[in-house]
Image 1 (cartoon, rainbow, N blue to C red):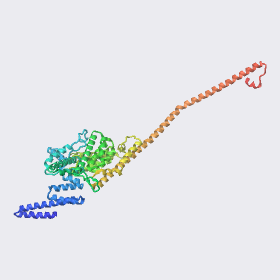
Image 2 (spheres, helix red, strand yellow):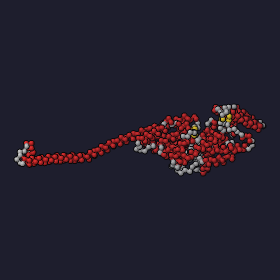
Image 3 (cartoon, one colour):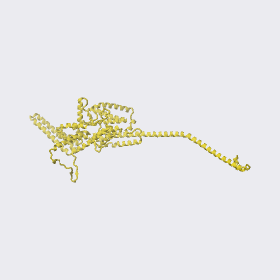
Image 4 (tube, rainbow, N blue to C red):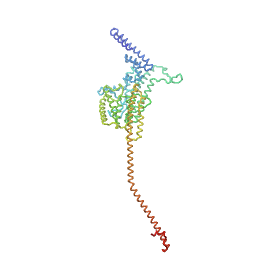
Length: 563
């Protein structure tokens, strides 16, 4: 039908050039365009009302044809945006309405103002501090974590309301706000939804002036046939209010976590980020990837290397081209002297930097957030090349294998006991088991359902590599503990033998002296016995002599005593 219309339009245009009534034919051409566009929009609206995905996809084709004929037709734009939102094609909604994203306006204004001075590239997108940061990043002296200022976003949006509120409806802010929320642009979504609510309430107040009192009557419950109250369907304003409350909760928790991280309260920051990523209600893919990246930095600062590597793996599973996650994981592997894995991440970073320089733009769409500026990439690429060369030299010199600091990986001190190792290994094995490595995807609101399998594969593969590294660390540390236990037993045996030998050498002269004393005592006892018997016999002899008066003979039994 579109081809038939294009051929008809060509014939009318050719006849208008030769006819003296060209003005009338041009007017007829414009009227025919309008009728066709209205028919396309009417058919698309009928298809959308069925709420079937295939019908809505057909309606999108009709709306594209209508927008080809009339690119600024408001009804066709609104229907297309709402259809894309219903089909969960949030990226296309953001690309379609990216001129209304507040953060993109701020970055474009900043780049235009700085490019007038000739000091920046128009391709770089900078962020504005939300919190006053006390710590500086080691590389360029700026805070490591940045996000958009909500007050600046509100100012930008309010400044543009006076220009566009009469010509354009508030549906743009509501539809784009929902799309930004699902894309992880929480600050932009909060500002857009609040603006849409404000415009909708203002329009309602303007319309309610001419309404009668009967127009405001409503019933609290809808009674069904079973005389049971049924909850009325949630209106768009109610769903927007619920979504806005959830967005504010997530932004508050993220703000508190970043404040604790910059203040050096790493355990508190980990607790706040864990509430976000482990919450019962899911969060968008981009927002969760950013929270996992920040929690990895908190784990790294707290000395929990295995948990930090796991969070970097989750971030890269959700966002494979995240530059900051790759650099963080490379530094983590280097800190435990696992140089091959660190070199692999550095080589991946070099490929990303080279592709950015080749394409002359940052990866992803214009509204995507990045933690790197375009003008900083050549310097980072040079430092990255020197770092990779250093790691290659260290690997060539043999600093691999047993040189890995497994104690730092597991989070134990050197000289730990076997019970401490078994407890730490049990916790790490349960937490980083490959079967449970993809459970975080269930709490993630993915942008595109088509990428679920690839995300699961990346998460499972990285978790398997980390689990094997933990098992090698457990085996290595356990062997060291067993060797230390055997060496300790040998030392105890040697010391016990030496002590016994010294005790024996110290007790030998004491025993000889006691033997000599015993012999002397026996001799003394025997001599005293002999002396007593001798004196007793002498007394008997003298008694006998006195009785015999020296003339009585001595008995034979006493002859031996006289001898």
